[in-house]
Length: 328
Image 1: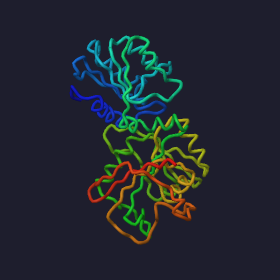
Image 2: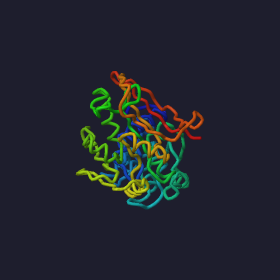
Image 3: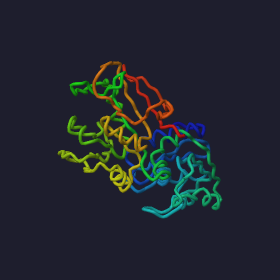
């Protein structure tokens, strides 16, 4: 991080830290924080990684800054917590640090932990809320779980131009290019869980271990009644999707990725449980084979499921598109 940046530029830096930490966080949000001195010079940052430490981002940043934080500004991706959980309130650590100002990007929707801004103001610290869509997006998994009572669920698809994920003879490796497959590794590293069906596991024997140095290991889940020898995976031997949700909620998963075939993806789609789509589309046409989506019972354009584009990127010869389910 460099000094003398605007608040939104600092928030963009925090978003990179927050994205990188998302796979390390269960139950808790992937918060990032940074300390700057009174002249706008960067001192230290911290990011919460629940699987490694209970210490929150604010605490880590202030510990790294030490006495240099006095008179400075603390930038935080999420409103500092004001409750006792696995650790004490971040507000108490901030009060003792000597910072004169706290700027945060996202208000805490959790009624248990909220109220940090009010507590800091009551202690004489200047507190500013400056909304950041970039940090809302980076922390969207946790925000979704707190607001909706379940993880954000993203479906990843690798398909041809005409929407096939496998040829008619069953071959599917490799539809997309090397660069796209590397990008998927980074996507997996941000997830608390990766989910597949017994049929996909039996066909492909995926490991779902992110091939990224020092990446966290997500929960790897196989859903379905078929018997498969999936060592290292959690087996949910059920066709009841609520059993999957119960497991994800119990484990505190904020963001889950689904990599499976059309039958399982369609079941989740019909249950309104696909929140985002990440589609890697290769410049190939098969004309026949296995589609990534099955019959959803939609008979007219008026009943089509609508999606809002988040981003479109070229990766090698492929095109990656990212969509969010449209809010009606």
